[in-house]
Length: 161
Image 1 (cartoon, helix red, strand yellow):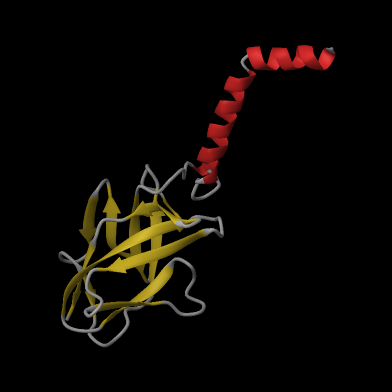
Image 2 (cartoon, rainbow, N blue to C red):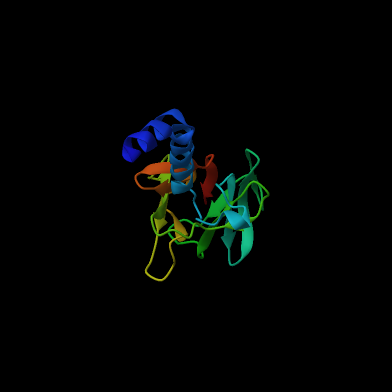
């Protein structure tokens, strides 16, 4: 009898609504790139590319800017120094996702012009670019999480000379 009253209470009270809200909160928090809301890094809004700690390109507020000129310069037949990628939160603060389930993926429009290389010890968010042939192409970066894209950059122009 008590169990029946409790069931009736749960089915007529706000309990079903609370379950719905709780499920939504759990779903939203499952795709938090950093797992750390206290720092305000809910999701990436942009990214910055650093070479030897110096900014070479950035996507922020839907605009790409380059430190020199209108592209990233890549040497022909040689690798760039290590490039480190940092995501930008809504306030422009840089971060990298802490959860091991996140990974970096890239897509090059013309792989005959540009290649990406990673080496043991470079780190999860670092890589080298190598010019395969003279020309211009673009590269996009994606933050992957559990088989889906949480963020995709605009195309960064690269010029191999």
